[in-house]
Length: 108
Image (cartoon, rainbow, N blue to C red; front, top):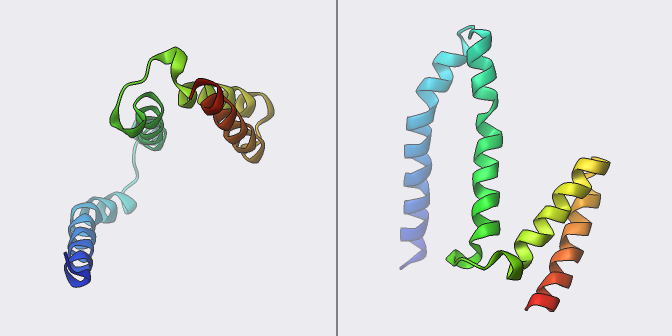
């Protein structure tokens, strides 16, 4: 596949994405939403992120790992606990990386 084809596909996807999303954003940005709708919409980013994270943790590389032999699962649990306790994104990230490397070496 040529570089031109790849860039054309990327540009086409960007255009379609814009055409799908822009009309609703344009209308909703000028409209006062009721409180229940704002509350409901506030859960969308959290749900999307949870979907991405859980998929990568439970099925790394697209295959299921047994829970006790899954370094991704154990490192993510510890990372979540560290973030919950200390509210430090950087600290949780560093602890998560170190835990993942340790669990990958042990369970490898």
